[in-house]
Length: 235
Image (cartoon, rainbow, N blue to C red; front, side, top):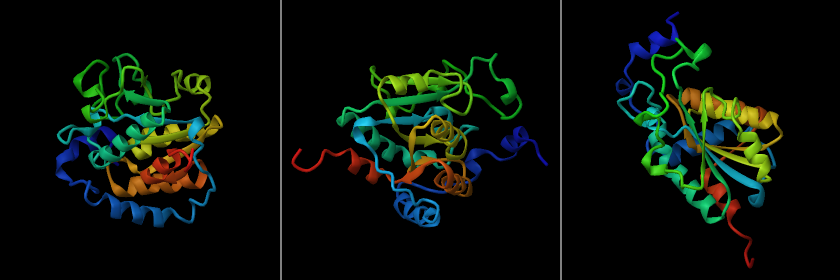
């Protein structure tokens, strides 16, 4: 078995084409929805006035096609992440971002697990320019996969009366899934975007959506969330 560090070295990110593009995403999303349907039978509907958007790790480190940590499904979902940002801002609902990076002395078990790490303060640690946070929006810097581990995210959400957490970003099967599972364990109602999350390949993305739908999240489309954020007719 090749260690994880060596796996990253054996195959350059550019060697494998993206499993989804902006053009193919609508058809892919419909297929994913059908494949997880038997698990995704929840009756949850977003409560707009108690909802927040969490944008996970949409950083240059994961979105640069020439980078060693390139998330092949990431670029395709940037436009839908942008739509979600615009919708939450228009509805005057909280938007938070996470940034996964390290100072150098805080790697712990992650040291040696990956071929490269994202360093705090570096250009690659920055949120992609397409999704820049507003000055009033928090960026939660995290050192592990879950956005709740070692951060004040839970306190921040509780202080704002948040019960419903909408999650988009990368990577579906690592930081997104870890964060959603932790949110669920803290009694937040979770909504994971099937067409605004991405990872390194399609099997991992789909497996994560299945697992989340089965155990801890309603897996939804960007259009669903935007519709739920709209004020009732005549309001």
